[in-house]
Image 1: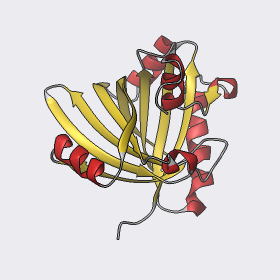
Image 2: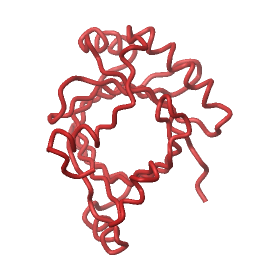
Image 3: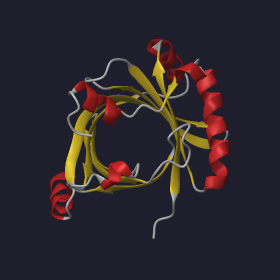
Image 4: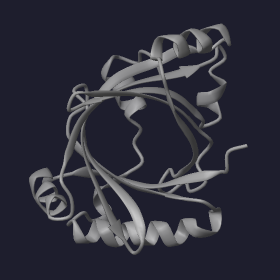
Length: 193
């Protein structure tokens, strides 16, 4: 059985994305990718109601394509929305969609994210900083995350991420727990999630 991994994460709505990009470029080269995300739920929407997520993601960038299946449990830190996560590469998206469909899960919402990923180390942690735009949502976002193995390390990881946010010029008033799924659904007039 896979061990429980928590995605310690902060999300911010950026007021000066170019300044943040310039600071990130000093830490790592940008990997420009497009994510196509589809979130699945059963007919009773029990995953959404339980703050859980079942996501099928296709990542396209620089001539490569990857498919990932992710399940996220309910948030363990409400201030940040950090969640335990189980994720794996899969071979074929279409086959997995059929498996999910036959298990009773249907796409509840899908959308595209344009992303610039920057991977770097801070305080001995692998950190992924992603500058995100979603065509259906106004604004530019920053996701800053690291994976931790246990609840006991979550506070320390979040503290390290806060220091990184500060170094990038992102203040507390820029932080958000807004979900892309909810914002996209709202932009579509309530469709989906």
